[in-house]
Image (tube, rainbow over all chains, first blue to last red; front, side, top):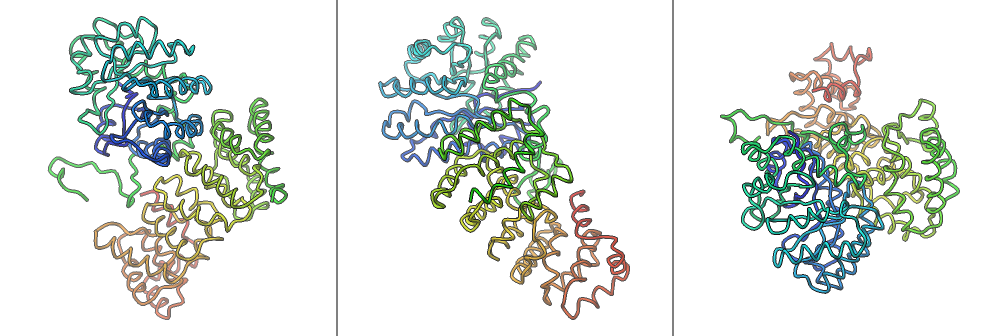
Length: 303
Length: 294
């Protein structure tokens, strides 16, 4: 089965993770712009971060045969630095029209402060302007209220639910999200978000329509293989194959293809120029190494 | 400067006209007028939108189009380009240059916020810009870039480095090509810019590779031959009798152009190779092709 992980922060991950993703059948990934574990203090840090999402990281993924996309946005946590946030708002239009940018995100609420609210609304307007889907980060704390409030504000700004992915749902939030017509994403992230056994239970009740599974793997204790692992567990526990395909591949494809920047042929049948520039397969830039297939007793040898 | 870009932009537009439908052409012409206003924002947006408006098909230039390229800009060979790269080039060339410093700043912002495809297009534009000396540091930065496609946009089929780079900058370009496995075949000026310090760096690199039991790229000897010293001749002698056919041919070719007094006698030890060179049976092109096929 083919997989998409539509929420993963690869800047924090190693080449081993890319290899594991490939070996597990992940074809495409989406890296939402987010905070990096510690707040940025300069606008240049944002500029270089955004540039790396459409530049170096995209190339790095391609070296392993994975197609890399991203979302661009000012995250809610750092939006609280108002002076800096204003500068980020000036920078965003430059990046939102880049190739491979599939949404505005991840945006929404963290502490649900008035400042967060201000920049959330400004970015919703920006999304309308550039006609991109929106990826919503729902808060860790006061989650239920923050999730409902996010949807209220989106509706206030007149963005239709089919253009919005609400992420990090749990048992307490998903029904309302689905009932209101949104794409409903679940993050399989040990300890703080969903576990995949709970995910399988929800799938059995909620069905696959508009449900999306992702890893949000980042710098914390998280699992890059959350999507394929959840797919396997769901299959073992009797979820129909076509349901698994929807939640681990097709729904994400449909939601983000609304950007015009995310099509299956990108990774199944890429244009020649992309094959030259962005699909190096196993070719590794440093030192002209060739792909290595280690036999079992050579596994510890590094050439 | 816009005057000097006249025949070039006219040629590029004629290629665009023959490759896009009327809706895409209308968009290109409309945005060209916008870009000509000198408003940076309009340039950035148009530049970014190009692939989704015109697609990314290979340019597939005809032979006469390639000749026309050479005649408007000597050494310019866009035969590997795609259509989006061409239209992006067209927009950049239509952006007015009033003040060189401000113009470089505008380009700097595009480079520092560019995605992979944009960076490739931007680096390919460098040989077509007026005031070439204003863009040397940028081109050198492209050689430091770790994205192979971006590096190749400067290093391959691009006359800018051989015309503008200092020896130090040039030598880094050649060394990095060999280091990351990019063929010298498409590097413009590779023989003309050979120099003694480069020869010495390449011989050091060959020794490192040998010490690590890694293969030595055969094309390396291309830039060694014309300046080979005693130490290099020892390496050429070893390589001439190595078990790599591409290496043997490369050593023979390097020895055949070396002015060193001992070069001829070393090559004489491999009369078959010497005769094959005289008969034109192999060249740096075939050495490169043999290496790529490995």
